[in-house]
Length: 298
Length: 286
Image 1 (spheres, rainbow over the protein chains, first blue to last red):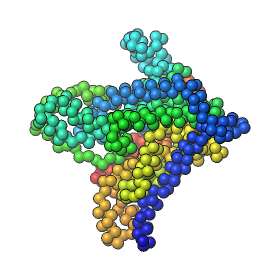
Image 2: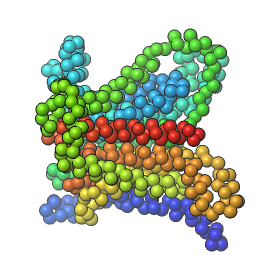
Image 3: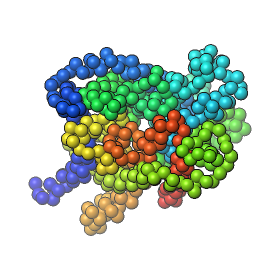
Image 4: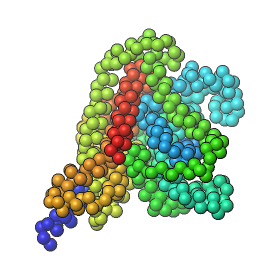
């Protein structure tokens, strides 16, 4: 081959290389390095040695299965609430938005212009025992009914309850649910709905037979993009929750920085990632197609 | 996010004749009501943040959940806390550097993936997907493991390395989407007219994919200045704005100094202005 032909063939690799190297060094290598740390033993003073001590994983599970299960539970609940709240919003913007689509999307994304931590802290401020949300609830005598529905404790405190943490998670990750569903709905050819109408489908049937199935790849991506960050979040649990709302992210952080038990922290990280990977895989087998994975990547 | 990057989709032709406006208006007020309620709910903590930046509390250390009257004084005392000022400086410089590096690396990757078919592009896509899909806590913890294993001092530089790592993929995705919509004949025409590959890239390809590059850059900036989780694993003793706020909220049991509200408000206003500016200028070009 001529020098020129070689150059043309190598061009894409040369363009990929710098970014690929960055990801290899600061993403792939660290992940492998954490995998090796997870089976080490030792302590911070004398250093850690590789002893292939796999039982750290079972210790991690037996000690911390409560926060792990709680993280998945919060993840499932928050994702379900996000879907229920978010699907109609995505539908509204995509189908009824008309020429205001971009403006409405922009309004939906406004929270991203304020730091995630500040938004969560702002919720803590609003949900404070003397704050405005409880003030409104008291004025309208809503604490009793909410307690009856097991949403609030009887003393009418919101902070340090699961309600506050799940509420914060839903708040922070809702845009991640709406956007992929919006993209899927937006792609639906209006002619398809007209065809359904011409074939005597009423609005409900047209939605059920055309719109809903065609939006499923978006829903798939939305679940993925919401569930993964929600179940591994620990900021909401720290700021809005109390001792009873600890999530696996909190434990990983404590193990690294307070207990200096690096193998335990690494094992917990891999248990979390393993559960999420298996979950995503099963979920993709049951519901998804390659199309859906592509949507998630975009 | 995708909304900023995607090519503008033509609105469907309004079939006003077949659906007279009166009928259309009667149909479904529930959906818009729901949508506006959700948008209001999403905006509520921002409104609270802005309003309580004007709260006339006596003590600069903490804000109060009760309204104490209107004041501008916190805008005059933004820089009262030296470490908060340092933190915000770190956040801004790290976000700018992250944006610059991620734009260069991500655009190169995005153009290559959008333009060429080559062996191994599947694995590159998988790497990018894994990077976006991996939980932040795992990304942060993994980097920390490596820094600990190699005895690397954590600080400003390690935060920057981490931020570029989680931003590249987003730039790639937005640039690749823009690249996919580009007509390859334009580049060929430039080559036929005697332009070299470098000239073609800067005179033809780059201007066409610019909206994708800008959207990717904005995303990188926003992700970097906002990040808490990954940064908290790799910061050492260096503070960023979100870390400082988190620390202050932990120390005082919820309330942060009003200066935080002021800085949050200014960043919010600046971000909105830039985004609106980019949106308006790209609309003009199209």
